[in-house]
Image (cartoon, rainbow, N blue to C red; front, side, top):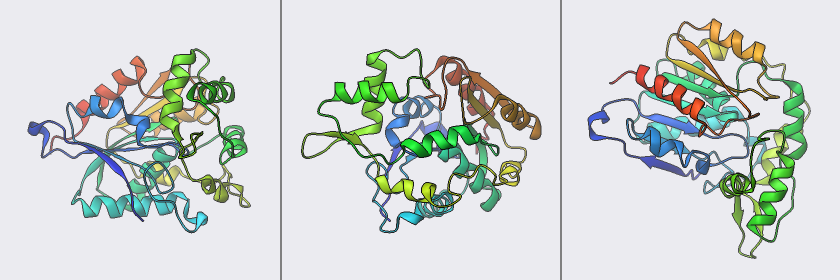
Length: 277
């Protein structure tokens, strides 16, 4: 697979420090980190990967490869090709699941993780909401039409957003087709594994993968309105690991954009705890 990534060099004095790998959510791409990545890159090298089937990464011939373990294999192949042995990870939703699986399968490589509104216990209602809309076809004639439609679909996630906020988020998640229509920027077939029997099952035990993070700095971000990561589950995560901290982002659901001031402050503190070499 041809995978696309954005690479932010970081300062020369941090050249020997483990870089930070950013991984987006299920229907998202590298543009999710268009503000956060250059901000963090003031202190560390940052790599923002697009999973197969998203953005500028190639679409898979077999839609049943759109599953977390395949994404893990893709990420490992990219890191190995780049000669990156140790790294930290910032993962939103699906990206956070991949981060936990990397901790479980690549022991010793992960030096820290931010899990953005995701964890080893996921709420079924939120998973079903995502399964209902993911992969839906349709297009809009203009960016403004697309922003209004996207805002209607996600009004409960970002209740404080105005039209300019929706327009910014829509341009992160949609693209312009050669025919001049606005569509979501991912392969609609990423929904295939979710719609297979048991594809949106929240009953898989991911606690061993979370526990594999061990004593590295872990930041759990939770949207206060989240229907994916329950407050009780997030609190349990913070207590389960010795260097895990929880930050709740007010007024947003699944998932925080990490552009919020509360998220930035928590990420700043997390970066400061990462190893320097």
